[in-house]
Image 1 (spheres, one colour):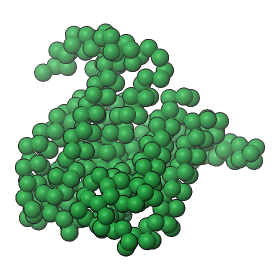
Image 2 (cartoon, each protein chain N blue to C red; image 1 turned 60 degrees about the vertical axis):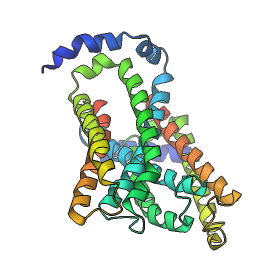
Image 3 (cartoon, helix red, strand yellow; image 1 turned 135 degrees about the vertical axis):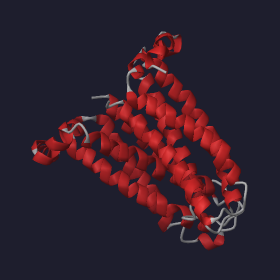
Image 4 (cartoon, each protein chain N blue to C red; image 1 turned 90 degrees about the vertical axis):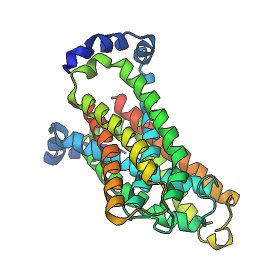
Length: 159
Length: 164
């Protein structure tokens, strides 16, 4: 699907009141971005602990399901905060992102990471222990997807 | 202080500083590394703070939780510190004049001191409260301060980026 297909939608986003509000002074963008990054840090803390546990690289004294249950509420809340603050940032500069390949890579990775987390990681992490290779692959893919979103996100500002 | 300013200007004019500053690839890669490492370091620190506050992993001894997670926080912070130093090396003159940057360094120092006091103080007497679901007030205070101070460091870093 050509990117231009999305142009009218992005133009509409760019013109919303919320987008205009974020642009309306120099304070909103850095403050919302701070919230975005604080939530990212919380999410990364949860993802690193859960993924590395699946990879048998930390907290081996805990069962996988125990770790998953402990970190999940924080992971869910930080993801929610990231999505809300990220949407606000996006609305304020939607037209700038349309032609930015880093933005599209980020959105694709984000979608993949969310699907992978709730469809695969959460399901696998119901078990007390996950066998070597399987756990390693699931944890590794999860880690790469979430870290990749951060990389692509940072790249939006530079492309 | 002016000796410090002279030093910043000297670094600013150096070949390595100019090279990082003007590179289309190196500067963004260092910034990306800085961000990812902040995520790993601050995120895992936050989980240990939540244990100290008696919020997560209450059934497990605090020492066991901290010992399992803190190596990742520390190694993450080493990467944060090195990448951050390189970013400073690329823009020392701009950073020196910026009040947000000075506050960031101040809060970084406070966050470090909080961690140091915790490890030299109540952490040493951990065997007395290791199995408490909710640790004593001094440990909870250290956890709460850590959360607030690190969040402030991140906030000041963002303001710094948009203020010059």
